[in-house]
Length: 305
View (tube, rainbow, N blue to C red):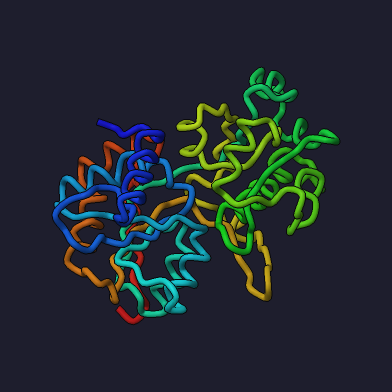
């Protein structure tokens, strides 16, 4: 049985009032398994994966949701000690693998980029009727939301999508017309705030993974496979580059990877949780929340083996 978000939050509040640590599944285990995961996974982790894994493995799980790049740097910098790390795209996981903080990372799911929009916003009807999404997003005064590209892969992914769309629709300059400057403070919000701002009408549209709008009953526009980052990228796709703070990033397929960390306080439980994520129960839950199968994607392995 899935736990509704309001019931989950009520349980967390009760635990906090009683002086207990906030965890996904209370068991007899004295120390929760610490799971750091990409912020886009909050709904499925809180409502489905966390409770089910706690019951299946007999451990308590405690989650930390944030931009995957930021989490990777906290893990490698030593400010975050976790048992398991789950990232979207290979790049944040590579940071952890290259630092020797994990030996391998299993591909557990994939998704695609979409354009979510305010259900009662003034652009909702046009987007729902299938008018060109990119032309609507160019409209002066449209309030668009996205995340910080320096900390969150999704913040970079919408930039790649718009640059790929320039070529796909033959619209030079489209990315700049939709997004403005790369670091546009009028558009950039914390990932956890975007869906709420769409629901309230503070934003007209926003970038999202296809897995995100559903739990909030927010409509979205699916994009052509050639630009939604769901599959294998061409050489031309990988030729797109984004430089931030002296570091160059390139598009990657939207695959989710999970790794048991080498410094995990609970290494056996961490490995068991990662194996469970690839099993039938977890995969069925991921499908329910709109995640697609990883499709036999090979695991990532640390260069030193």
